[in-house]
Length: 137
Image (tube, rainbow, N blue to C red):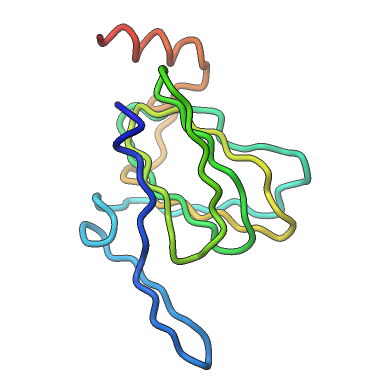
């Protein structure tokens, strides 16, 4: 999978003086149906999360509060996205290594996933990930 398939997606934003509203509809705003939603919060300063790739699962990452960086790697090139708005999300298809770091204080990272959790779907070793994606040439 190429980093060209990863993309920032702007979500609908309904502005109102009482507070804004953003929503997500599967297969409309994001290119998959989601089966699981999880979020990261209270991440200690200097800590990073993720450090894996998924074999079959697509994900959509949103900074619900605060900011953080998402570093993506397809085995050939690397790209960094700074997420800091709750009405933008980052679509990451399967077979892309991801790391999340540089969390601001009080940040909340929400992830929508196309599959339920399955440990067998993970590449947790970067060298194993590289061998797999480069072996598909």
